[in-house]
Length: 132
Length: 235
Image (cartoon, rainbow over all chains, first blue to last red; front, top):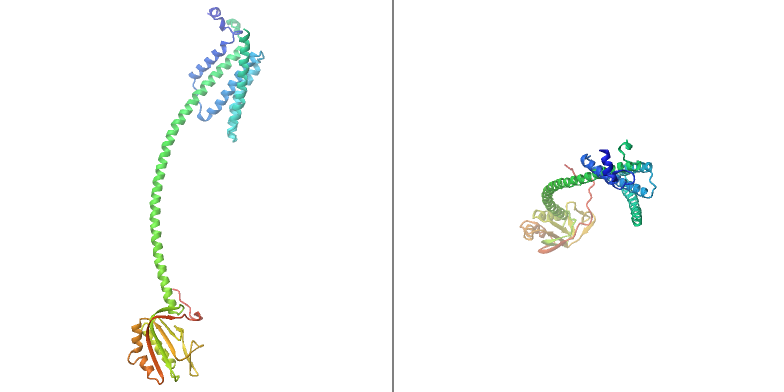
């Protein structure tokens, strides 16, 4: 069965064809989330939101790094988890200490990076396709 | 394990896949939580609105009851004010009457005027006392002799044939006695047979003229009344 897999689906082999892998991973995560529905207390939905933003920013940053051939997996992993967890935590602390505007600061910080990475990724993709 | 399955999974790709799974999972969880929260909020606000309406209607009732209470109070206070005004007016009238009786006010009214001419100096203190007494009996409200108001503390003296009122003021013939009251009653009191007129006229050299007047003006007592020994008993 494995060999069949090998023959039929070359695109599934990890390595060079990395384009589909992220989407498969994403789909798997979505399905997983729909199956395992973790109820979030409404009070904390805000913090999860900022964590998601940080995760998206990290992911896009990772994509950019890989397009620049500068991807460092250890750096990426640590950065991803660190940002995602700390973003929510820092905004929560901000609410507690009476600085609810910290949420805004986090949004701006991650949002700016996100859009910058997005622009760079677009440029790299454009370069690649332009040359091909 | 990897080589067995002949999937050349680079470390990078595994990382990416895992990360993507996590991101997908987080996204879905967040979306679900967000929509659940907004639904809850909407439901809550309906509930809240219901509560708010209930509270407001209770408040309206309370305020309505308060308005009724306040109106009742207002009527009571107005009533009391009117009563107090009446009491005050009565007190004022009392005061005025007493002041007149005490000779503290300049008064005017109808009454009689007597002019007693005494050429021989026969008229004495007792005659004046009789006159004043008769006038009081006839209901005189204010009396004056030679423009000196006659009140409770007023006294007549005779020193060396001269008549003094209140110790200092000398009165001369012709003596003018004014009295405010019911003119007819006062006139009759003096004129009565055997009364003052007859008594005085019988004296030698004494002539008496009485007239009824409409607008007599009697001046007030000169000095204030001071009590040194008499003290009121407050019960």
